[in-house]
Amino acid sequence: MKETKRITFCGVMTALACVLMYIGAVTDIFSLTACIFAAFAVLFIYIEYGLRSGIMVYASISVISLLILPEKLSAVLFTAYVGYYPMLKLKIEKLKSHAARWIIKLLSFNIMLAAAMLIGRLVLLVEYDSFWLEAATAVIANAAFILSDILATRLIFLYINKYRQILRKHGFVK
Image (cartoon, rainbow, N blue to C red):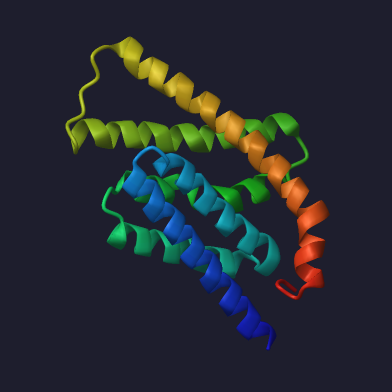
């Protein structure tokens, strides 16, 4: 019975994340926001059911969104970094040094950002008007990453300390 609940909850979270990703892709305005919300689905599964279930939900959302979304940017971002970052974040948060945690987080994000910009330049033939525009893009992306990481930390705290007990009380999670 417990395995059935886990599979069902993982399936529901996967479906919810895919619906959010689809709405984001269709509206175009909410594509990145939907991508982040889908990552929270992976986060909650990882917290409740562990790494194996988190990876399966991440992989399922990635494959389904790459197949069904009419606009692929959010699906690619989810697959390339945003989708697995919550699991990586919780592993990094176990480090004792606050500075080391931020260095590793920013390093992992900037490696992904550099790869995305390089792929954009070489494969998609994206040309930036100037070096300063490219630098500004990187600075804004880093600021957005830092803010979203702080938000994720607060949401994790809120979930674990308030909403997790409610879900357990009603039998939704273990």
